[in-house]
Image (cartoon, rainbow, N blue to C red; front, side):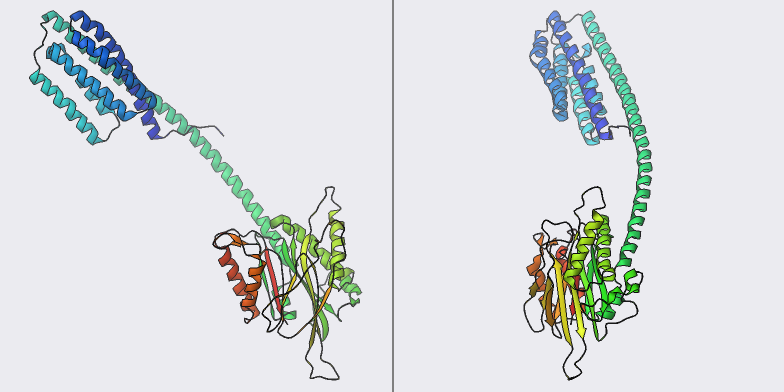
Length: 498
């Protein structure tokens, strides 16, 4: 792309104006320096002294104004000097000597300045009025000059006036042509650059469209590995999943598996389930003695990199359950960590990515045959990597927190087996698992993090609502808190009421 200096019409006008001003100042200096010798020769010492002690210093000041680009000061100083010098010359030497040509010259210069019409009109009145007044009042000379001398001065001033005017007009036309060429050259360069920019814009838009199409397709693939909403509602009817990716695809994901015949069973060694071709939940519902595995996972990063890690980690969870027949949350996480590390170790470069996760196994046992009046019993097993489990028991105004192991699913110095926590739940208890995207979001009046304490208070405040209503309120609270601040991370919150 060509480097083109942008030239505006205003800049051209200002540059043109100061070049003209410099031309006028140089011409004035030369003329007044000659006038000093001329007036001294004629014996008009008043005019010689005026040039030496007033005109020349004023012209030097005008030169300084041009350098500093003080346009209004320059105009005032230069026109004041011309007025005083011309009036003094007419007063001492008479009208016939032709010094009034400089008043006319100054009037022409004022009309060529890019001033407003009212300013030009005022200057025309000033110079025109002074010219007429001096013609009427100071027609005769104070000095007795010979007619030949008067005629000589008149011809000299006429020649200077004609020469200055012609030079001035030529200089203006010459500069105008130069600036037109510069402007045309700049416009040509800008036109070429604009065409190049349009070509690049088209290429960028095409590349952006291809990238967006690829990411949207990646979203379809990622959505395919997430359990569908109807499946979650089928096995956990009183639940919600609030899932808000930061970008089109996400590093967060949620995962669900149905395990029949209770926790700790090894029935997953059946060939059909081990093949992984048919998800174990297909064709079955949560029966009299069965359990559901559900997890909220947060992989390293977000967007496309996070989504790629999520595929590896999701596959590790699937293999741990379907291929290795594991049903205890802690052992599932142990095996998943092993599988994820194996996958990343295939790379020639060291990969430290992994995931944080909260994994829950819910089991519902049937009624006792000896006493059918006893209610259903519910047991929960939990294991976590950084992400805790929160329980709000029915009628209790506090959040019970089961802490996770402080080690991720991935490479870790001195790893230990993940703990499995066993709990008994009653009807009406609510459990929550989530990634850190919700409490870590910045927002509010001061742009601070939402934090876990505020998240707990929010969950307690919505306990009397249905799970669908809770999801709606949590989503609204998140958006209200975020406001105009960008979402900083993926969000995944799962709530289950027993």
